Length: 273
Length: 300
Image (cartoon, rainbow over all chains, first blue to last red; front, side):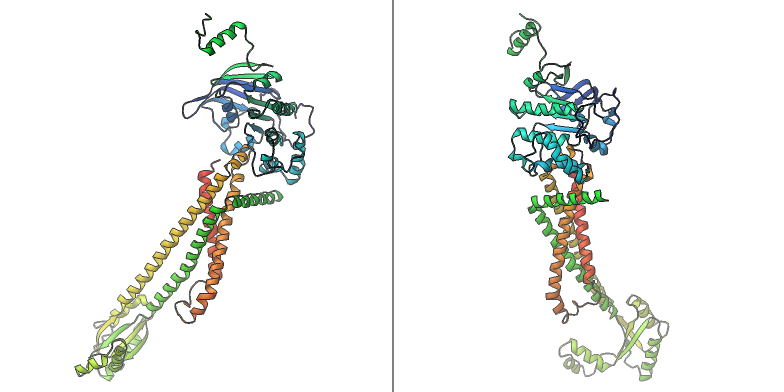
């Protein structure tokens, strides 16, 4: 099980026998070209081990979301293979995809909550879907909502909550059955910096229970504060993979000057003068 | 299977929630189902009654064997015996010249007066022969016609009313065909409308479907509420139309059936059986309707 200190809520976790040497996520030379011809990801190779916390960073359209969607098997790679916990996604038949997704928690920028259901029902929903018994649901949902700090809002509807609170609900839903992998696509994209810190703390706490976390973000401040592994994408290519990195690569003054010139459109990038 | 039971109650709740949220299209589908079932419920007995009547007419099919004018009483007895002995003949009835004239008088006004002008009764006396099976009419005709096997010189001519029955049968066939086509079209319309209702319902709940997929619901887990929704619409429509039919039957048809033989036709379908058939048809139609949509619009 999870090599983490927090095991109190891990009661319902499915028994799985992960081998320590198998990475939770592995991209092997993955290319995704959309039907329209635009490139989502190009020749990306990446390994993420158990319990890691990884930021995928880069400007909009750089392929962060494509990576997330590839991992959920919402998209199929055009070339290359993706493994999750040693299983190649391409070999999973369509009918087994739901079972794959039960082991992946997902958090999105737009929360994806069901607007006409209460907080409690929203979280309970993901348990009902996987056929959890009523007692289990009644036990787990209040627990997880307490963990995300929403125990007083069980019976509110999502639109009665603030953005941060809604994101907490979606995190609770993603984590209520303790998946070994949590994917977050711009989880703080709609939130102010103060609220974002709370959300990130929550995701970090989930990571501390042993769950592998992948966060796609362009929240520079957050990445710089957290100092975790950073994978930077640019136009679909992985341009940097750095342990405890910053949002931007530390640059020397020369590099800075080159970039600035490039951005201002003065001079050629290769020639500082 | 407590888990299955729990799932079913979950599906049922989801289905009812879906119906509440897309009640307008659901109502339209319900009405189409009601109309379809009503038309079916009216058409099945009508078609049966008309076929029943046609059969009755067919049973009344007779062969008229006209006697020659100079046939004696002895010839008459001989012919009658021969006819009664012919295989396939059910009954033989003798109609004398006078009776024939009287019969004609029923059909034609002033027949009596007109014939009096002729001075004598031109109508031949005849034997009305009823065959056992209308389909064997031709065989019977062949036997008793002049030149048949039991040679009967006293028989002048043999005629049957095949053409009449032919007309009746083709008319009932037309009624049946039209009824079937109408029922078929209405069933198609019902299926299409239910399919559309489910489609709207799927569309209204695409967010929910998205979330369901996200948290790992299996395809059938997502589909069941929609199927149940369709079946509920179909079943309600069936019940409603059966109620309407029952009301119509007790208030209109039953009092009238004493007076009109067609309504009281003996071999129409039993009402309970009709009810069961209609309910089954409604549920089947709605299940097909939702099935079609789910295949096409919920490829998950």
